Length: 178
Image (cartoon, rainbow, N blue to C red; front, side, top):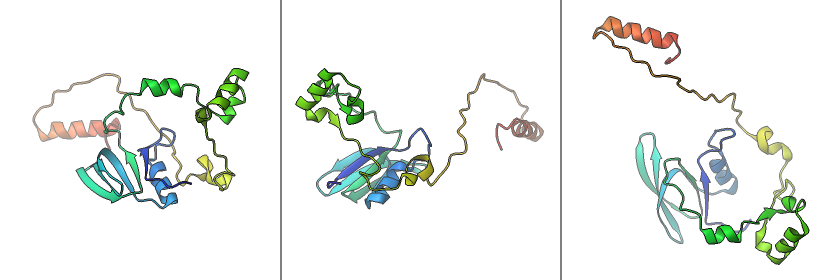
């Protein structure tokens, strides 16, 4: 792999929801990492300063490049796409996708090689197939549940310890808490 100054990744993927891809890539590449990034404050040829949001608040950290930065969901939206680049790369595809393309597309890709997206196979990255995907994951997600509240309820309580105790028992019985 060529020299890399910075890799930017999302905080987590939606498939396993384990927030490990960025940190594991950094570890495998021997790169330092900053997680939960909310803003890149500054970057120059040698250092990066990042504001990150944690459970206990916000902190600003500085690190030396190269650096893996995983971005938190609270970060601002990416800048809008550049229409000129969108048009330039609208026919970009991988070699695998090109196999099903018409002769016109194949000619276009030979004339404009920048439209070909590199694909890496297991052999290209020199690893074992068992170390990839679900079978290679160090964690297994047992289940993911999406809780949807159907309706709002309001309850007026008497300002007594007994009323609060009764509410707590009800919430525990209904598995709302505890």
